[in-house]
Amino acid sequence: MQRRPQKSSQQGISLFVVIVLVLLSSLIALWGSRTAIFNEMVVGNDADYQRAFEAAQALIQDAEFDIRGERSDGASCVPVSGKPEVCRVPNAINTVWIPSEDKETGDILAQLDNAATKCEKGLCLKRITNQDFWNSKTTLTSMMANGVGARYGQFTGATTGNASNPILKLNQTTTSPTEGGWYWIEIMPYDSNAGNSGLITNGDSNLGLNLKPNIAYRITAIAHGLKPSTQVVLQSTFVRQKLKN
Image (tube, rainbow, N blue to C red):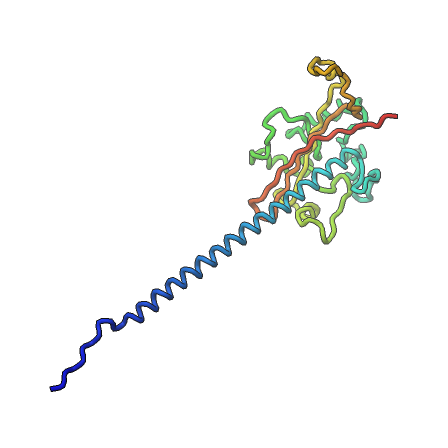
């Protein structure tokens, strides 16, 4: 009598191994794709931050040209036809401007004091409340408005080209306050007798700042990236010094 071969207890194990390998391969592929997406997000966020940082630096520099009354090439600012705000020539439109003499400072500060935000067209009184106003959404919203803040090139006539920072290009085309960037210049009168206060102990009471006029300016620039979560804030202090004869 012929004996039948017994069925192997290993039947079907190959299918099980293949399924496990497929699952492992899928998990590895999923992990790889998620890692690639994460890296892409990190690189994209970093690139957007760098764009915003460079735009904020350009806004600071534009504000300095605004204070000096110069164009971006260092030449004296020349009014532009159709753009009455450029160069801040005192008139019915430019009710506030950069003081060129000490006697103008009082009138300009009084004009700014009448504004609800204490700012008008990028010029502001020295802040006596929280300095980091950008951390208050309500305050920042009120500051980022036409007639309160200043845009890139608004008062200097600076323009952008095809290769310019896209955030600065947005500055000159957008109407949204949360796009592009803004700057504000705080006018802070400087007491020319500060050197006689007795705080200086090296025996030299003459600071030799040669300010013209006796004003220090604090510039705050905020640039928004192309991504909604990107925002860069820079501050700088600037003074105009007159050259000795």
